[in-house]
Length: 600
Image (cartoon, rainbow, N blue to C red; front, side):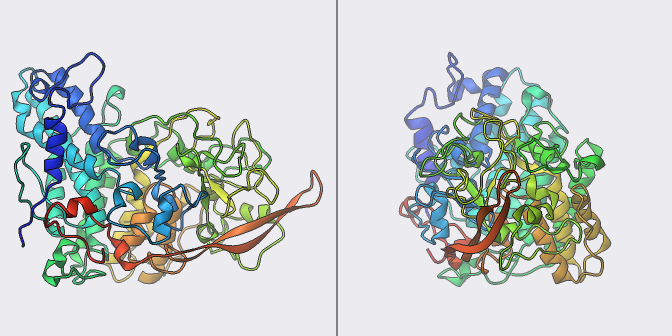
């Protein structure tokens, strides 16, 4: 492999050591931490660990945390929504302010990638330096016992593994850095191959597993556990087995084809799916043995939403993401949203429209008909027909998978105590900029008001283990085995959806399962990465081509209104093949010979 110069860690050294040697750690008021004092006591080390988590953990809701973390390299006025509005999951109601729309226009560039998606690029290298520092010096802490040190080592190895996973799915292979570099020292660090980075991330998480606890006390909520490590290991292997990477030839070749192993394996191996199967099975077994489970109360499978501004029953699905302390959550990013997330999302001014903006004060997220049409009929399990239009929109909504109403604010739905009945129709105050026809509200608790509220920023959840286990089983076998049906039907049953029909071919099962993954994992930062690893992003209506919505009109007189609906195209999106991988930031490439990804 060609040796290159890699300068990101040097930048980090200058930031961390050169400009703020005496207080490079985030710290509570009145506490002065330096690199030397961190390892003098366990109390100081714990403070450093908290800071390391802050830099290392990833948020689904990017915008709400970007401005609070130093060295992000992001202009705080830039609006980065969840990845939801990049794919067919959603659309940002403000086409200009929200940077996710630059993806939909196909104008992402190396010079803008940090602002337009990966605002943690620089933060990640700071985290890596802090992790490596802990691994190097933890044995210097005099009042920390051996068991505590083993757990801390395991925690930071998990964090390092997770950060490499985040880089793998964006860039492919990146430099593996395990050293502590000093300011002013030139670093010769090549991009490692994709396979080398996968193996490094797996080594870290495998070494972490035996020394991580099954759970933490409430005071340490948000710190990693063995359950989280199992989930991370399975996800790494899932991506490694997927079509984007498990291939002899990448979607676009590097200029020198001998360097293609930076962005894929360079060969296909079906056994990579078997490794993923084993990892997901181990994760599910560990979950069952340690109190993690799918929320499934039979009486709450199909909640009766009244469509009249009344708060409906909770429902299993809503509880799984709304309840902050439920057994389905494996790991979440611990933070509180700022006030103001529920008002004034459109232009012209709107008195409500919804908190899906997650702190970006000017734009909410609407769901295109492209995605609405993925919700199957709740009785038959078949796709609904949305062509041509209709005269009773509420009846149409009533026929859908119960997860639909638990995920969106729709016409006549309850939204908040201040705005109980959503006026999503032509002339209604909540229709402005709602180009899809509904507003995404999943992650917003029903108790949310026009004030601050707490979101479950979930990184790993038990439901995804079942779904991705089913995917790996299907991909490894010539036809879906019974275990694959059983895994996905667990998820469908808790939302009163009929089982997958038996006798599906491998391809039929794949297509139906991908639809199920999209619905179940809506707005949890999965879809954007899934459609890329499946290599379907450029299919019509996914991340490319016509995005459709619903024109909604109210007819009749109170209280007997009905609502007509008509599909229409509101946007045509662009997706180029080079967008399957992120470009490396231009200023990083210009510092040396860091190889840019193909097509950029």
